[in-house]
Image 1 (cartoon, protein in one colour):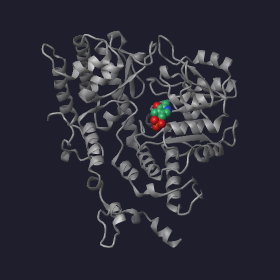
Image 2 (cartoon, protein in one colour; image 1 turned 120 degrees about the horizontal axis):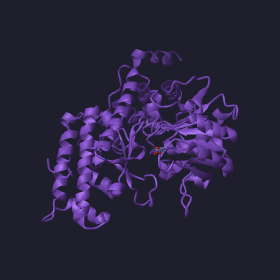
Image 3 (cartoon, helix red, strand yellow; image 1 turned 90 degrees about the horizontal axis):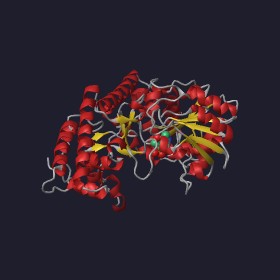
Image 4 (cartoon, protein in one colour; image 1 turned 180 degrees about the horizontal axis):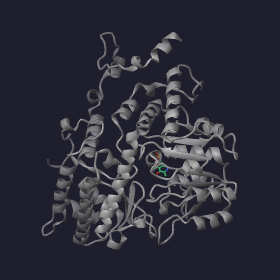
Length: 501
Ligand SMILES: *Cc1c(COP(=O)(O)O)cnc(C)c1O
């Protein structure tokens, strides 16, 4: 007891251990591998990590669901905590030896409530979900019974797979396989959530749960309206703020906690932590006074086994960052950058869904250009601009989405501000114009012919040559910026990367 009190003294943790990278003279052969650094024992995996590091350094990361986490988070994530089993909750574990793991999980929960400005008397949080999808399935398990009815935003309208997605042929995800799900949508012209028709649909469908939140919706939510609809049917209201949680924590978007029973999130998108999930639950729910127990039991044992304690340490240290005054400045910059990106694209005459953004993402409708999202995504991969194809409102085919989703969280983590985003927008403009040229030169509508025309230099054709040139420009710009957790000064092109310097 005395020892543990002493080691809680802050000074005691000021000197972290160093990693031992050599076996001793008495280490048996079968244990020598335990001390060898990755690069030594496994150059193959090390090389893959080096190539991925190089890709992140030399490219522009515009995937809206990604971010660049901190050095501290990566250190926690790669720590010795990965060794420990701790099924259960702090002070109620199924295994011994959890004194420090308990301290970690309690600290992480405290910071999670603090980051979202929540009163611990009214809200609790489970920090064990392995990721956003598992957090959502555990939340559904806690809130409703198998085959109960739920409503979520349809996938083609920006919703997420875990909110009840199915097709005409198939129930696609656990949320539609184990529950009856029914999608609500966005308005055909404004592309905004249709709260009134949602309310009418709910009167017919009578859901037990309404899920809000999205993966590709550039505007904010009216949680109050959704609460009123949920209350009409005695339904729970759950917000999945996976994409926007960093902006919500900063107070830059509407507050879902005011109206929801449960709030889930990932920790690796705008929140800038390790890959994991969180489930917040109301402790003062009249509808379900036992919500705390229901959520905790749903995470373990219903849906998961032992928590990933290295990840929980990473969440804790990311949340510490999100509690600092600088977090608000980061979130404001992410949004300002997204607005700038939207304005620049609109100024070039391009069409954006909802004509702009309130958050970190922009949905770009390429259909007026007669270009598919797949082709632009592919071309941008050659250019070192990472984006993803995305359905846009009214897409005829889910297989060939007509749009692109862009986000500014990662570029903002590389220190970019509005004037830099204008340069990025110009690259995107050049990429689209180049895609149109290549499409014309390929003389075909097929993606495979497009890829050939973009990558193989052919006589009398400009496409592949211009791709190389634009790639050089993108790389020159991207490598001016730092990459969190990496000393880019020492970074060299690793073996296996074909492109010229
Ligand atoms: C990303 C996302 C998830 C899933 O998170 P994973 O960590 O990929 O499992 C869930 N909900 C929404 C709205 C998301 O955007």
